Image (cartoon, rainbow, N blue to C red; front, side, top):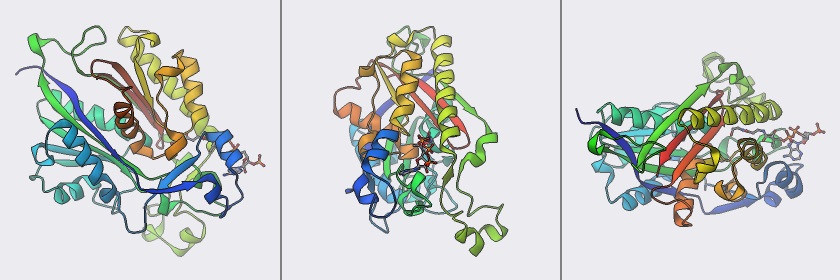
Amino acid sequence: MERMRTVVRGVGHNLPSQVVTNFDLSKFMDTSDDWIVERTGIRERRFVEPGTTTTDLALPAIQMACSRAGVTPQDCDMIIGATLSPDFFFPGIGTVLQNKLGMAHVPALDVRAQCSGLIYGLATADAYIRAGFAKRILLVCSEVQSPILERTNRGRDMAVLFGDGAGALIVEAQACAGGEAPSAKNNVRGVIDSIMGSDGSGAQLLFLKAPGSVVPGFMTQAAIDAGDIHPKMDGRVVFKNAVTRMVEAASNLLERNGISPSELDLVLPHQANLRINEAVREKLGVSEDRVFNNIQKYGNTTAATIPICMSEATEQGKLKEGQLVMTLAFGAGFTWGCNLIRW
Ligand code: UT7
């Protein structure tokens, strides 16, 4: 069998039009623009109108990715969804999108890696493509999180952080000419390497408890009253773990591919907190102009942050074919990881 590589052919994104500023949130809870900007870097985020689902939000992002790749969803032979906020408790968004997009009866699966959704999704797509199981995969990362945020004083630590958004990638199998796979040392386009990790001892340090099988019948009035239907986090512990794990994963990825941080053209980190990304950047020794951030405008859109960054960086001429690019994320699970890509 011919050796295959995974090339990102097109990326798209979609954000709801409703802008919610820090000042808007301060009308519902004791918070301020100063606190949110100083602790997180976030100035505003986008919230969907009531009734918009996660797959609704994803459709324009998919359309944009397809048009940039010059393909249609029907040209894809697999769909991978990544979200923590699916339309239904089950099934995942993969099958819902398969139907909405009028795709053939292709395999559809969801990865549940939260903020690491793009990393896990791309690594999974790459593995399927290299194994010869798929030729063109639609990878969709979409989140509608605003309805699960508790916009009161009790929920203010989480409510100020998150937003809604979607991103999509078309990734395609291409033959490795002469058997030469993409590497940090050649100019062959494609996914070079990925690292993924997890530590379930942190599962309840960033999680949404109900609905879930730990709750009798998955949901009780007591769970609702206790606020278990809203996400909870131990922010300080998550912050420290995020910095440690992202630096560790990125360092391992660079080392095993024989490159120094200065050889990276662009780093696309998950957007959870500007201070986290700044700490990681400093520890890795990457210059400021090589890290793309947009958390200021959108907050944390969980699985969607990195594809939105990819799509915007493309539009701004910062992400270009041939560049050596690293993605990097940490999130609930805990999960973390990074991809190295010759764009
Ligand atoms: O995407 C998944 C991964 N997520 C992350 O990586 C997020 C990681 N964590 C963080 O980004 C930060 O820990 C936060 C931004 C969530 C919080 O920042 P912090 O500097 O760790 O603040 P803190 O939680 O230690 O809280 C400091 C103070 C507390 O008051 P006291 O105890 O010092 O009196 C909080 O009650 O700030 C208070 N506080 C707020 N004040 C105004 C918490 N939330 C708010 C708020 N507005 N929204």
